[in-house]
Length: 257
Length: 259
Image 1 (cartoon, rainbow over the protein chains, first blue to last red):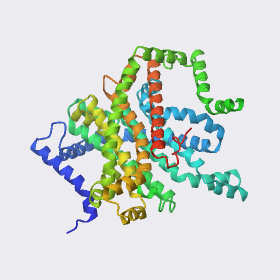
Image 2 (cartoon, chains in turn red, orange):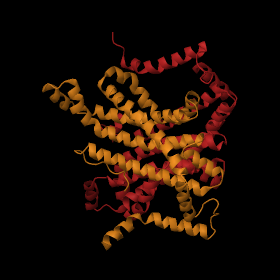
Image 3 (cartoon, chains in turn red, brown):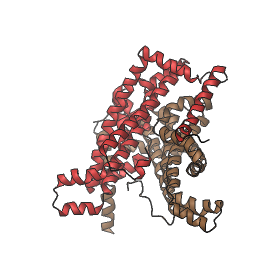
Image 4 (tube, chains in turn brown, purple):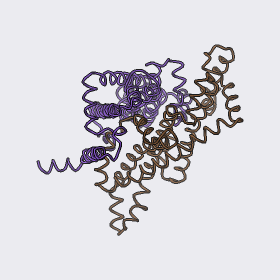
């Protein structure tokens, strides 16, 4: 008898959860690993009293504004750098150096400049999102086929047509890849900033649960944060799917769902 | 000669230009120098911290942790990706974990890691391992999957045994993807270690940055950032060199899409 593939996909996650639950019930797990059912109860409890939705709203607000600012500026500057050698020469050495630096290293400076509130978190999230998006956008423009550019120019396309009908459509798949990496950076930075900056949000809720030894609370916030990151990525991929209809069939992009 | 110098100046002018603007802004009092120390003071701090061995000490700790996590992820990840690509059962069992788990911000799990592995090196190495494992497995897996079947058929037809097939056909064909994954994972390992050191430790560059900033010694913070940037840059170049040496038959990957 063969097990259907769709069932096989679920074997490992379900087995892990079941073992976790079983060990948690029998008390074999250390106290800092509450059983999944206990975590689920904590999610329900904190959702009812509004603590979890409030923290989630704060985190979501910070990450979405930061992502829009960072990805937007990264795309604009990256497209500019791809099209104009002067802009490219200005940003390339800076990005080559800063790209390898963990952006969280700038957090103390951002905290001093922008305070402990939303501003510093949004700024550091946007700052870290800028780099992967910039690199992908710059690369996307530069790798547009010469023949496509020449053909369009040959047919007398004005600069605006070149930009909107040639460069942007050709670069769009890579723009989305950059935005996707940027979004992942956003969540990492937001988490670290909230953990250290302690002004609301899911990160602060995790620290609270940790300090109070309420591990069910801590896990509820962790699960919510992980889910938020996952859904954010799914949303971006859904948008990409709409924008790039028919452009990604048969490419590597299609494999990485 | 002259044209060459001009060309180089044209490509790299932005860093000295920004340093001059920075220095001018601090010197003119536009920016409070306590928040943003002057360029000169940063380099004095860099020189002092390297001279008295503080920065080399923390750098060595950060790099050794990152290297350990990265190496473990590579040693586990590449064979695992090969197993996933070659065996339907392994693929069906683990593919969803890697493809659905990929966008999950794994940093959220770090507090749990500190409980399981303690606050010191092990939790950080284990976390770097997890963060590096994903890009390594996913890119290597796609590489193993993308091997043209005629290559394998031809080798089998000529009587290649499984070990020969693996060593002479499958591995060389997948190596470019493996290197791509390793190159993505390498900076991640450093980023993750510095980040977790900032969250809580008493050693390493991340700790040095957070403790210097609480002492308002921002020249030291910038000095540490410079060191991290230099390490990341050198390691990326080393990885490219390794790729170039091992994959002498492949065209080089673009150098980080910049420079």
